Length: 379
Image 1 (cartoon, rainbow, N blue to C red):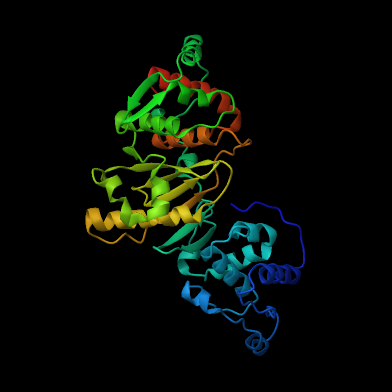
Image 2 (cartoon, rainbow, N blue to C red):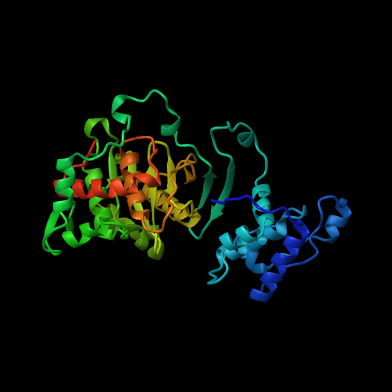
């Protein structure tokens, strides 16, 4: 998610700055400095057309415009396809707003674009990786937050724990750290794991896997959607080995038999959540820090594509889209991302409006301790 506002500066100065950074950092990257201005004549544009490195053609970045933005688009395409330790696409976009403008201008105007309603997609871009191409939609407003006439079981109230529930949660933290407190879907949890819910401690894999297992234990109950989850190790394996190697994870699971698939995403020091909404043909990415992850969406699109071939013997329908979920609660510290991930999962699985805030995190931590200790989700 790109946040602003940006300071008004000269666009040509930004372009020159981009070229300077790239020439110093990537001597092998050929970038022409004579970027044509939009107000010049077509003959001048032809004279200043940008040269296109062979490497860009090989990765699918094609230049066809000379309106002053193609240079930045090619730069972004090159950086996205080339592993760089100290220069990323987000760095370029944050530092040089002209690149963001170039990305927005790159999509041609079509009838389908014109028909978009205000409540729908504002910006679309196409992300290409080594597997497939997935269309990414941003600023999507979840339908649950738009509905004003939801049934009672979808109406969410954040209620304080009773004195008895609070006492149970507090007592659950006392005892041997190695004591096994429960098992669900082959996932066990110990008191040591449970203690990561105290204070501002980062949640570990066991807590997230166990809690998502509890959520999926309600699949189809009380009119809830049919929900399945993949463990925190699923995305790590998908990232390293590709969709074709994931058959072991779905050998006994048909993802098309469910409404929603929950996938926790571990990003070194941060937790996010991805979902596969089978009914809506959407792959959605929830990041409480407002980050975007086009690679994650592309990899999951590749996974879904492979599942269509192996399970249904057909091509993936063209209606599938990836969505960066931006209208969601924001995290205001560096400790609660795991709690946000779990609560996103619970709210999505129950089709509740995602209306909690950072202020609810201390209560959610205590509530999760109680739920795990009592082996029952609240509300």
